[in-house]
Length: 455
Image 1 (tube, one colour):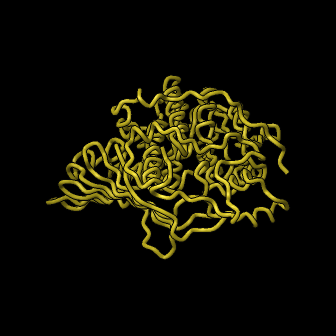
Image 2 (tube, helix red, strand yellow):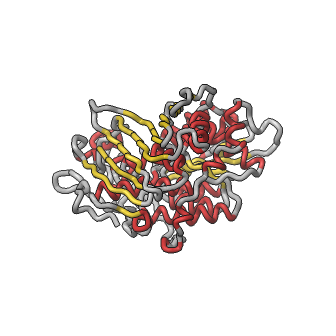
Image 3 (cartoon, one colour):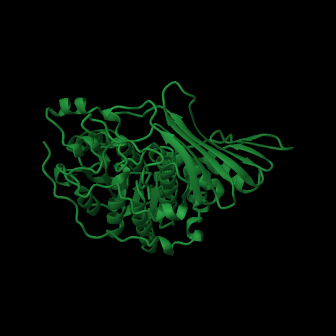
């Protein structure tokens, strides 16, 4: 049984006035920084960055699920001078299981006694205060709260993508990102393709003109449903009825407030690659989607397919697909067409007129490990790295796509970013009610194009 936790502080967060953000603000890119010496150096070998230093960096993990556990292990892989000292999660069983897995991998680098194991909605504040560097790996609906707090406390951050689930949360992340830059905080968002050697070299060649001007792009995340936690199974395991808040948090993938839908939670990776190639972010989107086969009380309110046409400022189009329907064509990939040729970015292949096909043939470390290698190198050696703004704007790209598919309308970037539609619950507590609730039949209301309000 979980102890009742008081809701977080209701202090009004800092926000960004959307009208003050210019088009140039939106179209900045971080590709140059990410392709710099820190990333390339991390690719070259597996040596520790900390062999020549006596510094010890204290690490906190906020969000102890599978991704958070893996990220903590990757952070500790960077060298003996990183130690995990605090952990936080809404659920005690997630923390306990995560701690065991991490300690099994790095027994000498884990020092998380009971008094630095924190549970509940406000637990992130205590964990952050105990550390120099924090990993933020809860479901994304909580990211704005957690990133704001980490920046307020002056901590370096690794945070998983996406970084918000709605525009109000996204604006808070943008404001915190600006503060983090002012305070020289090192921040990496988990869009790991930007840290992968084959991607870096392929995109560099595209930027150098290998296929001419980009005229169109395709981005896909067509695959299987990742997982589902059925209410009956969860309640059997708990030996009691779950509150609606507990259930939605355990089965978080299927609720917009906490997940954002799979166009955001997964497909952001592919959308970010095209943004990287384009050196900017789309100006508008229109599309279609729905829930064709993945229906039932345990599948919440999200779509099982989305198709979006994103338009960039130069008029070029990205065609975007993401789908979770069995027995269909599957692809997780990114492609671009230029005036002189084409690029399969995922396979690192460039084909151009009159030129021999190029394919990346170099070695590449696990990009999720490289993210941490780079971050901790930059922290210890005071090198600049901060990908929070790009992480936020690629998150906004996916949110705008979701707005287009949910509503069936053409959505402009400026109006999407200015939206005040807030999916977050009014209060975070185990007995509080999320905004989306099941009907008498146990089913949740799925957005209906032509009727759904998104702005």
